[in-house]
Image 1 (cartoon, rainbow, N blue to C red):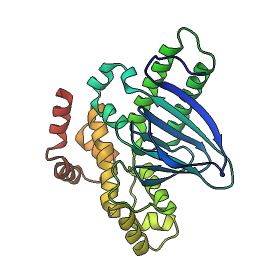
Image 2: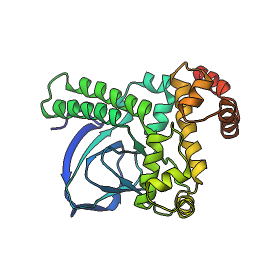
Image 3: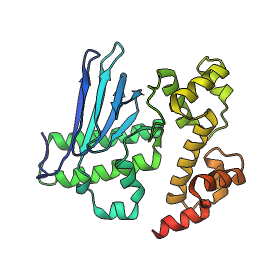
Length: 277
């Protein structure tokens, strides 16, 4: 049962999809969709780019972006979808945290750590329970849970490919490598390490990764590390050195050089400008 929000949309649904099910045609909505794959295997297509989703992966679809799903493997898949009209969320949220508005208006895949998955699934359970037995307070509870959901995603999610560099489909092994990087970016990992993890020749893996993602392995690793560093700059008071080391950089000077090259300002200036803005 959906809770009435007038002309606006906020609802959650849980469904089991069998491998024979596929929404092969691309469609779109006038609301933001948050898709979570709890179990099984899914190929999610958005804006003509294909993403291989594993259990615990989350996908954000910007309003009006075309998308479709295809379930594969041999076992049924369980998925949870939250649909939300962003105008229902309190305006101060986006005023104080404009990066959250940017996140919810960018179609992208999000990789979550195991602790994050548990937290999100608890929120999903509360939303499903509220939706199943609504009362006069349910609409407010749902918005409160939605706030918790988007804040958790922003704090703990790793946004792996917001803007695909080319139109080549990503193969399952490179998608797994991308997930591996997302979960281990703060550790010391090398091309040889990750190629060995997936039983690939390093030179073959390097060429395949570059061809499919548009990044070299090192460029992509730094992209993820820089993105997480910007999040820490905005949400913590940690020193620049602590942030650099927390995100996997072995030198704060190297981090500062990369950051300045990407953003045309130092990390300290970035933090000051965004906090004032």
